[in-house]
Length: 72
Image (tube, rainbow, N blue to C red; front, side, top):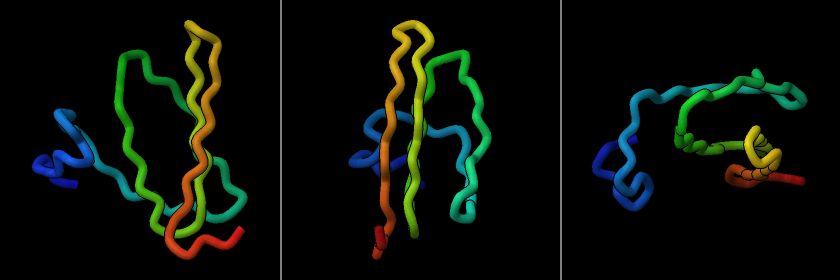
């Protein structure tokens, strides 16, 4: 990630970048953000389901993302 990638980040600035490898069938940690935050995910291989829950609106959003050459 680079700060000059305006086509991806717009005016957002990133504070932290992480690399995670997760094996099929594994659920990553559920956690809570107490302040506004923007997260970017890049799925290189396989697939991911990202879930976000808004406590105020009680709305659950699910995003499915697939990496290169994903086989369903």
